Length: 378
Image (cartoon, rainbow, N blue to C red; front, side, top):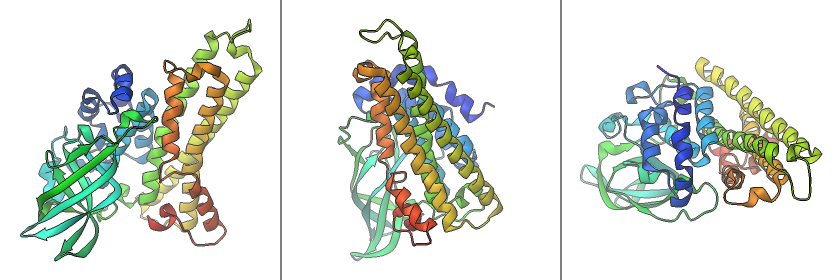
């Protein structure tokens, strides 16, 4: 059987052929989402019992990175799908029938928390969730809720698994970057779900599986880095192609012969390759600890977060370097660099890898308590 990376590479032409459609329609085309599902890529980090492969973190990163280099939005959709199946599916033993078909695609969001009121032997669910990437292609939605009885909360966050058509998509993803991710709002209004469709939150399933012992915050962060690495690699490669043929206005030599272009690609390569190496070094260290069941210290988690947040920042800076060196070419919609520059900024803004976590990591390295979500809350 082919590796996940090989199967991802097999989708290159299909994804490239539909990238403009994804950007225009603000969603991943169904044919692409179905092809990803057919290749089993959404589930490579899921338990084997759920048509998964329990692939190690490096394999996950390299697979996402490949798809993101073909199209950032396709890489983002894969990344989110892998997180959904890798982190939610392990708690779905009581409703396994909902996701056991390998072609089922699951969407979810932690950007809001709904309400599930006890009713008979189930719950009445209501809520609205933002940033539900890939929701148009999903048939199951994991709604983050708090259980209530007689109007009073009786649980921490859990998931209510809601099947289509019992959730509605609200067209809200009117953005410039990562348009094809289709990260619209989802509404569940007055829908009753049986108790067996209430499952553990992400990180709440006890398991001997090493992937589920990997620190949750770190796992959420490294997959975002994978998207940034893929987009940045595409940007650098496209700049090299451009520099070979472009003759700048009022010049007689090609762009690649200009010192500014040579400096830009050199510095960009340093940033991307250094960021990738640092991230993978930390991932391998944590993976060995997870397999051994070893304790991971606050200092180790801080350094891991540094690696991830800095990697995304470095990828953005690398794309900025080559986009600037490309001149006005990078501003035209017909230029791949234009979309790449838009898409990669969205990764940098994500809550799990935003630059402000670098400051919080510095607090931990200096012996102070963490304040932010990634180092304190997860």
